[in-house]
Length: 166
Image (tube, rainbow, N blue to C red; front, top):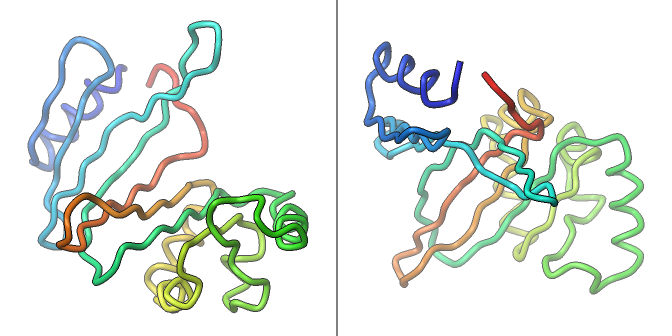
């Protein structure tokens, strides 16, 4: 079953706005906590003309200041990579979360980069957010600022595993 067919069937059962063409370009927009939630495929080049596709969900949030956060998927080597990157400052554009940031159940095996460590500690203080991270250890979470001065940001969650024919 194609991605568009899956989204279409979900749309028939649960509503929302469905947009799609002939390819796996389907987009489903659902209401979620008084905001739109968009589900689609994210494409990444695999070289030599190949493409990997990942399921992605995106929702807007408004924050007082520009904020960036990237939480990588849980990987066996992330703990060692965190130690290495902390030992060599300046290797990444964003700061790594300090080892003593707390919440080791979600921070120990993930690469977490941010431009505001104190605010990230507050974000990780949310039990709902930590539970979501624990429920989806293979997924990547990103928060990026949007245009303008209204504090618009985009939260994206992307699966770590590429999807083929559904």
